[in-house]
Image 1 (tube, rainbow, N blue to C red):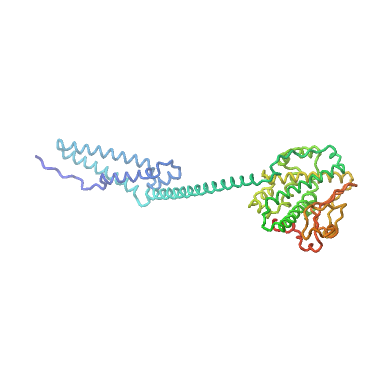
Image 2 (image 1 turned 90 degrees about the vertical axis):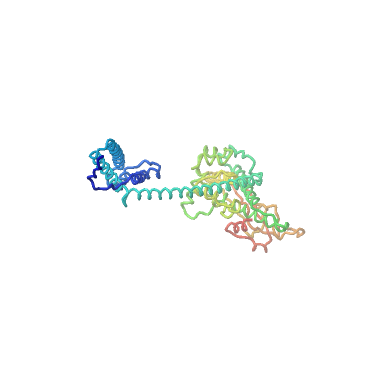
Length: 439
């Protein structure tokens, strides 16, 4: 039996099979962590830089070719043993050593300090950040859902409260304002009737606000008188704002107010004949009636009053932006505003036809004159039964509704009377100290 011939090569393999498998696992780690994403050109270039400037696919192909060559060389090494051939053994050993060196070079190329591991760590940290942001947004969604449910419950409760507490004057269907034929000619009689309708609508709207804000008190007698004074203070403010007009600060505002009263007869009749005034505002958003509603709402309904009624200023903000909210309160206001606007349009036409039209107020502290004044039904403070002739001892506290005089036809103004020594306790403007701190 021949002795084994020593191998001619003194080189030792620099890569083992377990080390080869570890290197292959590191190469596939990016696909495992990032779930095989579709890489863009920038990422592909980064991978090429991390792998020594070579394409990753080429490296993998070269690795599998080396593995196939290594397997083939190992088979040749086994065949060299049977029959035993020292030359074939040495040749097969050289091939295996060469292939192992190639695989080791590939392993060193992709496992260097600036290799693909840093990219994997960077992408993994990005995945963790995205997962944390997703969890945070999920928690925000849950909180917002709870807040939305709470707001929906509150809205449902307020809707039920509004439906149960809404005055009957708001619940009835508005039948529209039918313009009589004689209004086209603007006769003094038609203008007087229109003034009465407008004054009645202002009175109804004042009652609506007072009913929504007033809180009953234990002191029934004195408190009833005080509440009556505050009701009429509110009505006086609304009458001055809606029927007479607001005090304009600039000439442009005054010209704009006059321009809003210029409207064709056909358009005027269409606006007045619509049952719902909000429908008129939607159909004619640029009309003088629409501008009149916006300006008068901001002047007639103070922010303190709206906040006391609804605990917010949403309607005021909506109107200030040029809109008309479809709420029961604004519908009631628009109903009043339409009659007041019709009165102002009719007065402008009357002045155009040279008819003498003017509104008048009773001066504060003046004596009661039955011809031009009408006393409100509620007794004023300080009036006691059995005092004799009350009217001679009373003077005008303030005018609730102005009077109007068209030619020889006059409609008396409505005034609140009181004793002369009670004049000092009456609130003065602005708006009767916001209707004595909101009634």
